[in-house]
Length: 528
Ligand SMILES: Cc1cc2nc3c(=O)[nH]c(=O)nc-3n(C[C@H](O)[C@H](O)[C@H](O)COP(=O)(O)OP(=O)(O)OC[C@H]3O[C@@H](n4cnc5c(N)ncnc54)[C@H](O)[C@@H]3O)c2cc1C
Image (cartoon, rainbow, N blue to C red; front, side, top):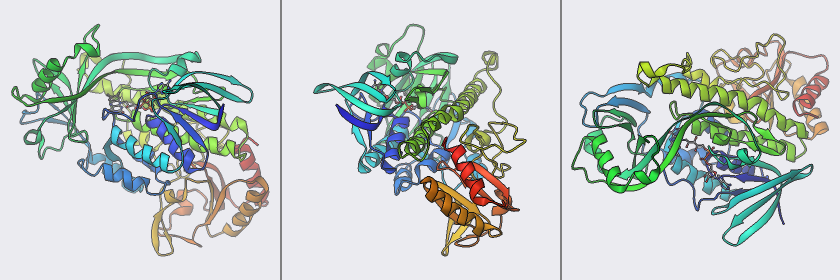
């Protein structure tokens, strides 16, 4: 029987990000994916900046992702039109807002590339880092006991047993594992089914200089959505299934006809490359954890594509599991630490799925919107304003327990993403975000900073925790002089940031016994 600390089921966004970041942390990981390769269809368009923040500590990865997105336009623009010949499309979303909204919040940018391209980059990176990725390999069943998980996997050579300490269930919307483990789900359920038709056609004269990525097309003969320039010269047309239809009903001739209706070019030369059916659903697993199995991505939360966060949420879940598993498997955290994954990520999964559902309602004709939630007041909050609450965060007295905040007003509260600030390191400008990713980071301002740094050294050795000590305005210069105020440590305090860039604990002012305060905090955070 083969043995591996972490077995990942599914080679989509969630599975690949978990495998890449586990391998980067030198945790041996095996991933099984039943298809022979990563996605063929372009699927979700783009990976959001928060997902990129979590992936960018892996050397070279951000550059490689940016490169695959280089062919796409600068901004994501969404328009409603009659067909592609419509001279006056109505612009529903001008992606420029994102640039403006994100200015000063992050050094990362959205990667404007189709999911299929991003998955390919992640696959190569994960393999380079030593992850054992097995395609054409399926999980058949698994059993758990106190010591681990025994999984039966099937590949071209037959059936094999694999023994793992933990399993990442990144097996998608229909999640066979979620069913096998009897995990109940909540939400509106499946709202419809769409056939996704991937095709090649020369649309350049129709889309040139309009730089719209996603078109909602409605006319007397056609209703659907078209993503133009979805990578490798392909475009993707999404068309709703009628009652009782399946992919087989979308014959080659019908697909060609649909593309011609959508584009408004009855003579268009069309080459159909692929077609598949996917469900538009609003569905949440009632728990993200069953023993040693952790659900991530669509297996944990399936959301309508409106708002474009489904793919990014999957990348974030995978990344999130990677650092938590690393802490537990290396003995830095106790096994109960893994419970914090469900406590922190499930409320955010629900919030994101509800926001996408609301956005779906907003894009529907008014009469059909009944029963849909109201859109979020500020979509920026859902990108960077998530707040976590669990035993891995030491809330301050008076914390309102909110799971959403305005990231521009967060101010370094425990449970919030640590703010981006510009620092000078040996003449080079870097972001505070560049400091996070590998282990914990203890930061303190100049006033009282040395005491905290000394305490950090003692506690790091005593607990065997990967902790970097960063005295601001010593090795790192606070270029704009905002650190103490932005992180809320003006009174000689310190802040402890987790590997995911979230503030775990903060001492607002100097402590009489800094060693005791820091050690108590870290033991609580790490379930030790
Ligand atoms: C055609 C299409 C278009 C989409 N468009 C958008 C969009 O525009 N915006 C958006 O936000 N989202 C979109 N989505 C959804 C988005 O792609 C998903 O949110 C994202 O892929 C979730 O990633 P994941 O890793 O959780 O799951 P998936 O990408 O579904 O990956 C799960 C993987 O698990 C594998 N698997 C399942 N069971 C087993 C098993 N037993 N053994 C081995 N492997 C197994 C599957 O083969 C699959 O590859 C689209 C999806 C599709 C299909």
